Amino acid sequence: MKQTIFTGMATAMVTPMTPEGVDYEALGRFIDFQLSQGINALVAVGTTGESATLSPAERKEVIRFTIDRVAGRVPVIAGTGTNNTQHAIEYSVDAAKAGADALLVVTPYYNKATQNGLIAHFTAIADKVDKPIILYNVPSRTGCNLLPATVEKLAEHPNIAAIKEASGNMSQVVELFARCGDKLDVYSGEDGLTVPILSMGGKGTISVLSNVVPKEAVAMTNAFFAGDVAEAARLQCRYLNLINLLFCEVNPIPAKAAVSAMGFGKEYIRLPLTPMEEGNRAKLLAEMRRLGVQV
Image (cartoon, rainbow, N blue to C red; front, side, top):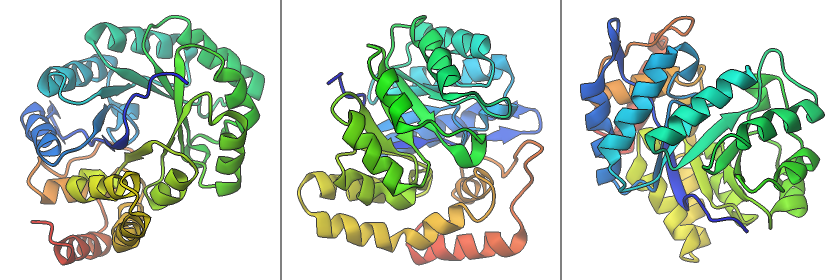
């Protein structure tokens, strides 16, 4: 088995913005908050970080800023995937040079790929970097499903260390563990399936929930790894409604609203995404207050 990148909870961070650009003051405070709450790793420029609407220069700078702010206290995972293989290689090489601990690389979207194409795509990226890669499978967003048999082949590459599995299909997750659970680490990409995937041998979750309640999200995985599965399950159920509300509109619309309400920047989100609808925002903030989140 390759070296584990992190165990527990990694926050897929929002990227605070204003109409003028990235709000680095708010981002710095948000990183400090996450670290103060005991988060196990941070992801910069993933889906939740609005990678699709950041310029190449902004992507590079947000990753560099995050690495510098974290200063080695937890692993920093850089989102470097795109549907252009050459661009993904360039983003990955830049992030590796900046000092990212690992790279999160999503499957190609829109133009998609065959399973053979996915093998060629990820192999081309992995061949060009010396950092561990986390494959990212989220077919609901990409229209492209990275199948367990394909992951099994990719797991033979020394630089492909893990997968963020967000298919939402537990049968597929079980097959993934059966085929290659001993060859690479599996992280849940769905907050609602943290404990189920841990029960199969998962190493943790790359989380949207932990943008809002990082301490409590970490407590869930800590309880599981300490052997208190009942407590982990209780926390999974306790935060289920908040998880559902964080996905009641397209991610990261609700997460951006939540983090803004907590004082980390303005609720500004780039088109084609739009601010959260008022009725949904009211429900989200009410649930946050019920759970003791200061808004």
